[in-house]
Amino acid sequence: MASAMRGALGSALRRANASRRRFYSTAGVNSPPRKVAVLGAAGGIGQPLALLMKLNPLVSDLALYDIAGTPGVAADVGHVNTRAQVAGYMGDDQLGKALEGSDVVIIPAGVPRKPGMTRDDLFNINAGIVKSLCIAIAKYCPE
Image (cartoon, rainbow, N blue to C red; front, side, top):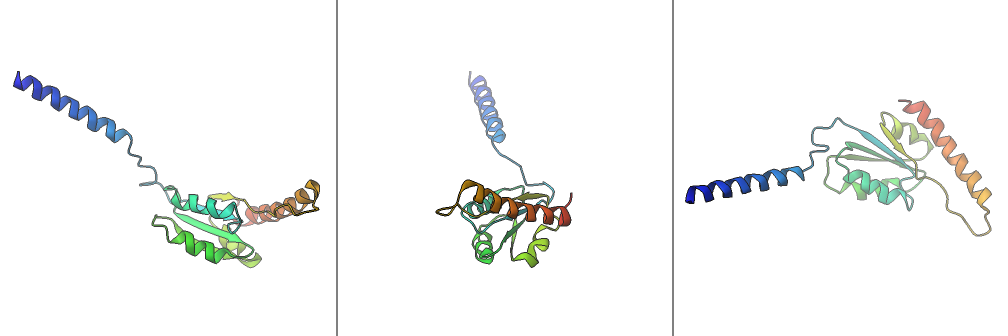
């Protein structure tokens, strides 16, 4: 009887350990290096998005770009202890450097709607911003 109980207990413990192992994620542990560029990283959407990308175990390099304020965002996000290395880029002259070698590019960049601005005005301004960023993406990271 005692040996049967030990056998049943051992079997139950093995099943419990096996089920516990299923919940452990190895994503990112042995994954290849991936660079993600966030264009518009200093804005209201870009900042929390940059933090989420920093926390993603699949990201090894994180390039944060905006026309202003990016070094502060990069410094803040860089304090999070993950494997992703963070670099901040600011201004038109650093856009190419931010994009070089990027595997994924995310564009939360744009201007918010101001009083008196029509939706057409907002669309035209933001379309121009996205167009210029897409031209740079095609030039610096065409893959």
